[in-house]
Length: 467
Image 1 (cartoon, rainbow, N blue to C red):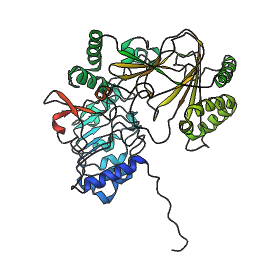
Image 2: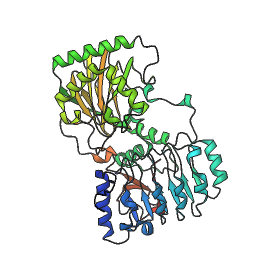
Image 3: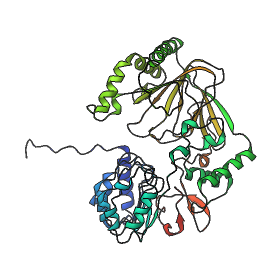
Image 4: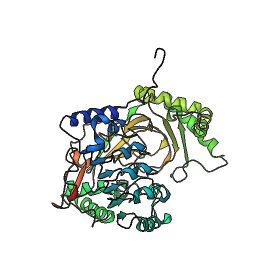
């Protein structure tokens, strides 16, 4: 009636719009039987796949939602009643929804590499699925032998896969990796990435069912030992005005002096650094009234001078990024530790200050299978995509660093690892990035490119290499 208003629906992201357009195009060709949104809907499942408009409830047999950052599956997933295969692997799921029990035709569920726990598996719902025959729960750190026993008892007719937990003391933390050792530089890669690299660079395909991660690593290291050291590309960041660098360094030195008197353990104690602190922007919190948000705001207010100087530095180099970053990490004498920034949604900027060895302390990042970039960030801001393995080169002296990064907003597509210097060699296959995914075919013993419209066409003959 007059004066009434309809509550606004959820704001559509670029990923939502792209999914809707893709469904509309596929729908013109007939009923949609397979849909892959792998690596393309980072934060949530597009609501359009549950719309009656495309009739997916009756037609969709296979849905791939893997390699995103989904924290939950919507209850509406239970409405896709014709599904026989569902892949939600490599997300951040902490639980499976009870509505999964409505998928009465489901035969295969892949939920590997999430954050699932034994009490969040909705075993009653899974046990009610009459056709379920395969359940992959590997690489969920909270699932182990107990979960395997529980699954065997509750789902006796289902082939369940769970990874035995490695004792905590036997695990090598990223901070303990020696950055000068090639194995440490490769270790951040997931097993499928290393496996594809082995196949695409050496032409040596390996069956995930019979060749485990350690053997893949051994073969890669043997290849590099024979091929020789990887090429090094020297890249310079964008200079920051000397006066501003001096102001920022003095403010960081004052922070370090005060931090030495801290009564409690410093932030992120597993990281190898003498001093470490993160300041978060209010933009990182969707609700600024939560306890975590209020605590972050008080901390930001306390170190506002440091935050302001750092912001002036990034504004000098990239005003657009300065409007988007959500946090800044400040460190003193940070060491090595090759790693991948799994929570970043795009590239970051890094800057180094202080009196440390000439030629040391570069920001290193893997550009491809054969090349590593050494980015000079001394009094400069270097842009790097931390979703590729990266580390700090060895140095001596007193080194301070400032890292600007973004964890909220629309994720950026991974392209190159560095963004300055000569153009990268066109070597996309060795990147094994999101845009170049491969699957292992157990019939041909070879990897082949994934094509969205054919991804599930040969499902019976494919052993998915995404441990």
